[in-house]
Image (cartoon, rainbow, N blue to C red):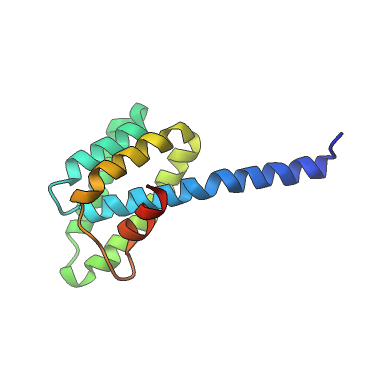
Length: 138
């Protein structure tokens, strides 16, 4: 019979094993969205990501993403990279929470990112999220 301490340690390890791939995937999705905010790919990517992650809250999550997008595209060009990084950080957390609630959405989200990644702009510098993280999870 396993002790309570052993079960707790095993449960904590299982959470960490489950959480890291979801965190990476959330970062890749947030980075892809950040890269697409000022492109013609935005409407389709936003719709597909939200449909996978939050089908029951599609309108609400779509509206929140669109509000964040409007704030980002209004930023002066000299601050755009920093604003994209902030967008990515904000949405990485939200997407991670949605994936934690619906881990079965991870596979379909990976598929969406894989399908759209060739059409997305490549970001570099401190942000670098689509290239760096997308390759890690796709």
